[in-house]
Image: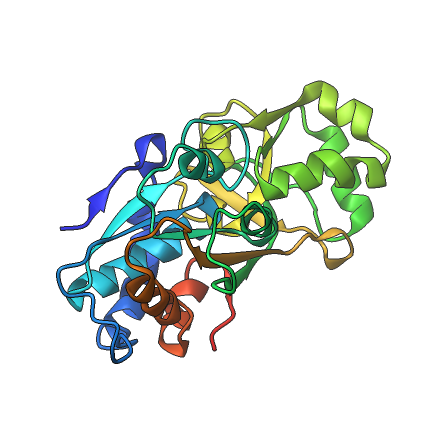
Length: 274
């Protein structure tokens, strides 16, 4: 049985796992651990941020089925919440592997929180926008249409992680609508933006597609157009205080293997398999 610490984000993952179930079955015998890196008797503590969470749950289930148990932990790549990955590391929690936004991981690497040279990019993530299930879909096909949709929406939400920082700090200014949208907008900490949309608390929510996809009660309208898209890489690395660095390194290799690519792709990410 996988050990899980999740909180409010547990809702919606049943649907996500259904999407990746077929790929998981095909990968069940894949990605063996390299020689000399046996995980027998070792249960790795791995913390993942939300954008990679659905993929990680499927990958961890595969590792469990192969006798390589993992404790699943969760937290944002950035921000001020208690479970944010930087806060967990700062508290000295016994973490072996982190999976998070690449730029935030790089900052932790610079700060000496992660093992130098252990970073491996796993996947790219694109931003999409969603409305409540059954609500009219705005046209997001061009930059001009996105601008119109954001202005027309009575309320808008974005995350407090990588996609939301881009929307709040760059995109709205680029579109020339920062004052108007911020006046009716909300930056959502920790909770998936899709859940806020599903509860009809906001009319339009934008976040990484991989975080929207598992949420029930919403319709994903479209990705942002390429001209204003912000692709976020997700990467894994070994925590500096890990007592199982070789097992952690082998685990990351398994995540980045070609056999993992179908599981990752099924969750709305673009895998970077080696």
